[in-house]
Length: 336
Image (cartoon, rainbow, N blue to C red; front, top):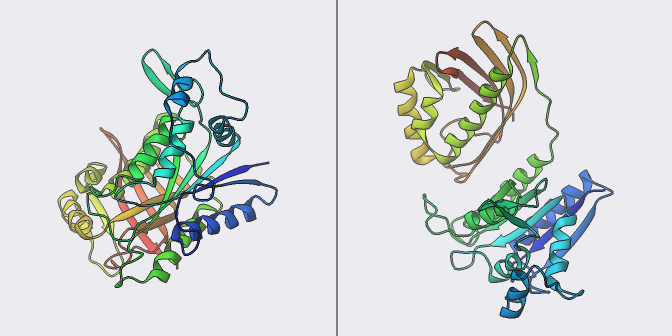
């Protein structure tokens, strides 16, 4: 039986956007896991106190155990039992709610949720999946200089060993010019995508383990370049004669033209996620043709110049070069 640990940190018990989305995720999760168990912890109704010196000193002393009814031990037990961790966290004063910070102060414990081996820190809570639901009243800056929440949450979870992290962020929820209904619907659509079944990739033809590894790394690097808006990194993954086919647009041919159009794109379009789900990849000589489905979510949903449907079907061609496998052709179309 799977277990979901849900943590809500909004001070709002009603009209909370993060609670609306954690509710939505929990309902979807229970449909997927009808026999699953949900542990709910509301940090507004049951706030976690800030650490005291007495409790902290106990953490530091490995020979001294906490009381049997210790809150810290209870919190650690909850997260250890969970297969999924769901956190709702609104942005307060550029950071996460203090109640959520206090929560992490109680569960980040040496020898319990992390350890140190040869001066290297190692998290002990691996094999879990974390979903972060974040919200803010306004819009973040392009470089996220005014958001110290999401980065902290991702880093502290990774520190204790939870590295499979997905984030659903909503912005502009109190902007009078924004469409709140559309913003929340878009976030729920992203949650829905998390529960769609994935397809097992079929490798047709002769692929060595190195071939598979390089092509898989290409997908990862492609997603990273798109989400970070790094056109140079994206172009470096392509052959010099890269071909880009976009509906209703002229053919883009060659690395220079590709770099130019991607720089122009990333200047205006901000991608939140980019996930490829390849169905089949077939090799013929030094070429490999991959077809599959593609999921895209954007930070600026209103940007519409291009093919940014949340669900797409694609054909990508890779070519083996002296520098390893590279992307030779990119083609995608909306599936909606």
